[in-house]
Image 1 (cartoon, rainbow, N blue to C red):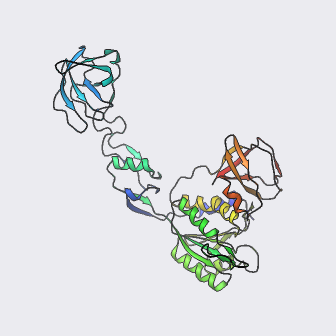
Image 2: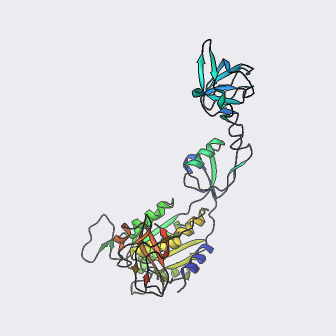
Image 3: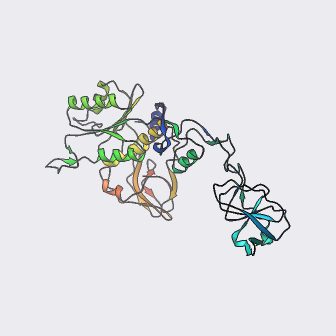
Length: 391
């Protein structure tokens, strides 16, 4: 049995890149850039007005100006501003030659004969965005490894990138095991329960931007389980199984994986819940055997599977745990293993939730995080700083 930190390091050490693919920017949301992006233009591409007003030369001592041209956005100015002259200009429009300042409409007074009087008290305000002020032509705007969000899509469009190279997503297979399981569409008969692990794992993968390849329920039959595992290994880069990894008579997932050529690297982790966690590899494929209880599945996925996928797709993972104070006393049964329990992050800190153990999925519906409790701990006082991971 190994500690969680060692288990995670082992998992991350086995992660391999899956290569690159080119996608249209319209399909790249949530993906990770594989190459640096440089601007092919200055941004702004010209000196432009930051607001509606009148373009003048800031050194012109005149108080009343003749309006010689109207410049809406998109129009190239046709005239040069001279002493005593100005141009009526709209936000985003190109500044005419001879002008270096825009006086706001609010700071002007209309005069007869198409003239405007300016309030010179605001002469120090330029109200002009300079050419290349935001980005210079040739400047690095997005680094390789950047997660593409809506704002990155806008930046890519601004610099003319319609297609981008991104890290390929892994194909991830999901198998639930257990003869007692039926799919949620069916009403369980005596001795049966609905399969919640499969849908939960699919949802956890979707939250990471991965579309799962769900293979179904493997009954407690070695031949059938082996056939499903073999299919999962053929079709996927990562294979996740839930259930069948403990030491019962029908817990033969580890044996089946070995028969299918999987090298088992560890099969016990010093965490509660989640102790009977199996991890192995076959060539560059990663295989995770998760416990059967739903809380264990969620915890093990968050601790080991999610970080592995993030590294595989080139995504920089934020710090998984944050430190917050408990807002009430909390007692728990002491364990030689690290414990993970559901909590609610709220204003002022963390509120523990009533938790009955690894099968108590209902508790997780009331939680928005899990807290880590050090081994040997049986009591935590209000105000104690603890590590929590949002879920």
